Image 1 (cartoon, rainbow, N blue to C red):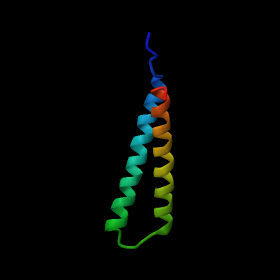
Image 2: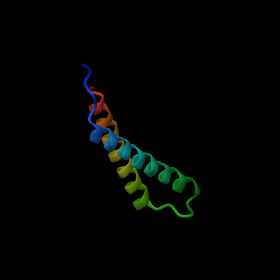
Image 3: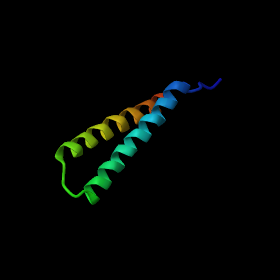
Length: 66
């Protein structure tokens, strides 16, 4: 019998991935089209995107039993 992944971990993984990708898109759009460079917003976007993408990939690997 195959092990089924935990549904809650799988849902959290996709939520975290979407939040991380959205934060990364905000960083890219802001750095390309922003009128003034805000170091604070750039650092916050980098931190949020790295944390959420890291947890998202981690939860996906956990749900696939890897």
